[in-house]
Each structure stands twice: as C-alpha cells, then as structure tokens.
Length: 208
Ligand code: GRF
Image 1 (cartoon, protein in one colour):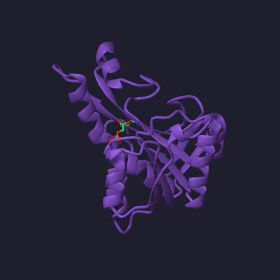
Image 2: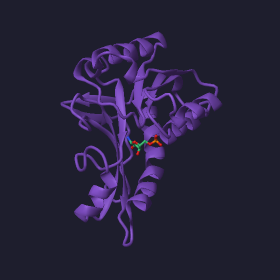
Image 3: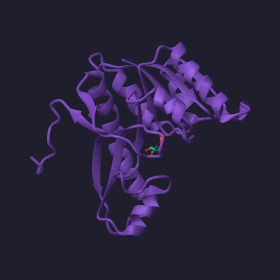
C-alpha cells in the first residue's frame, strides 16, 4: 500500500511510519511526504530516509480550494492509496476529504470524542481525567471526527504538566499509528455505520 504522509512540523509520527516501513514484512511504503510548511523539520527526516518530498505551501494559493486541488494532484501523481495526516495543521474541507473517504486517516492526541482540537493535554489536565491517550481515526469533514481505528490509553499522574503528559501520549502515538496503517494495508478494516470493524483485533488485556 502506498502512503502519502501530510505534515506541518516536527514529524515524529512520520518517523514512526518511516521506521515501520523499513521492516521488510511491513505491508506499506511511503510514496511521498507533503508539507504545507517549507521549514517543517519532518521534511529533513523524510530526506534522511531517502523519501520523495513535496512542499505545497498554503500561502501560495489564492483560495483554499486551489490549495487542496494542488494537494490532491500531488497525492494522485504519486498514486497514493492511503493518506496519513501526521501533525498536518490545516483543516481540510469536505470536497477533498470526501475524495479520500475511508482512505485518509489522522492521529489525534486524545481519547476521542473527548478533547477535540488543540491543547488536548491542557484540556485533559483541566478536566481532571484519570486516563488520557490518543486515537487513530478515518477523517471526516468535521474536525477530529470519524470512525475510530485504534486508541491507546495512558494514566494521568500526580504532578503531570502538559509536557510530561504529552510525552507519555506521544510514545503511544508512535505505536498505534503504524499499527493502524498495517491493519488497513492488510485489508483487515471495514467501516460499517461509521464504526470500524477489525478482523482479528486482539482485545486489550482486562477487556476480553
Ligand atoms: C501529534 O501529537 C499528533 O497527535 C497531532 O500533532 C502532533 C504531531 O506531532 N496531530 P509530530 O509532528 O508527528 O511529531
């Protein structure tokens, strides 16, 4: 399966995908890494891995539709099968999202549907939740909404600040994002009534 990874910044989730794809038996490869920011650190990670990169700078277009057409063209040019948003900080509008329905996924740093949007770790601490985590989901036009593929849970510990909590969550992001891609690439996922059925999903310990 050919992946198109969209980034805007640091690219640590991109790195997790790069590392996963390095295993010979991993069923996906990165065809192109696209950044809307020319200075995204993730572009250096992609180049270091010998990947094709492309900058589609949103500031260079007269309209959001023109920007999204250019993104779509880049994805098609590289015959991408699955789009992976990995810290891509532009909201995509319905026409583009619908073109990639059930073929575009996102990683979000909370247990959706809790804490959509930005500053999720601050929000979790403010809410006083005892557990927090991350979610991989198929993308829908509404922000941070869509059928859930995988989630990972971390404890919220006494003395946590947003940075400490974010680091604990990020370590889990790097595990579940490549795992979700693997499940899709193996053809083991199906969206039914806006929920994801997974063939052979192991039950988390304690929930079986
Ligand atoms: C991650 O926390 C991800 O969940 C969110 O944006 C952040 C991107 O980090 N969507 P990185 O660029 O992958 O390091």
